[in-house]
Image 1: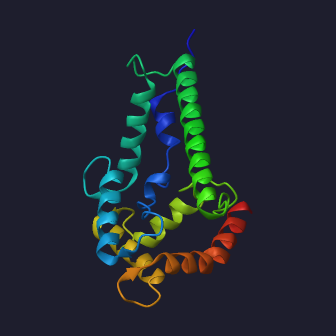
Image 2: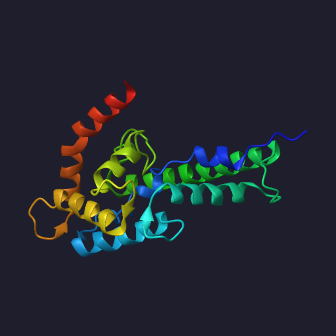
Image 3: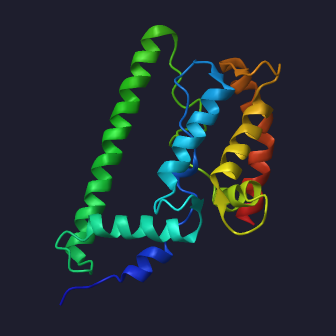
Length: 199
């Protein structure tokens, strides 16, 4: 007898946060203008607005969950068998191994250019990985009218607030040095959030 997982369970396990909330990262060392930040925010919003209604809310979470469920439900019968779950798990494992190999190769290239810099970003944490409170924090900060949904205007405004905080000299461009300084300045805040979430 096949073990199944209902669509409702799959949908309940999905969160708004995830990697999709993070904006596209600038190319290493490249300056980013305010216009670039606005364009990236619009692209990130479009990716996250899974149902295309112009709002980020629970409906998008459900739509993404349904898409993920459909990808794993190989036979399309609306149920996930043990075999389908195992195949999905193996696919994720292979993708993770490939990412690790690519990062290691990139680290070796950087090492040849002048010193190994692997591990500088959070002790081997995956890029884009966030703490458990990130989704709630994003909703709280971006949902300025408190209606439980984030509009594109709210999302973009939130992205530009973060841009302006990093733009130390207020010239409309965030340099690599400004990004680095902002990241260092925010480290105690991130650590405090991690401690709070761990309690």
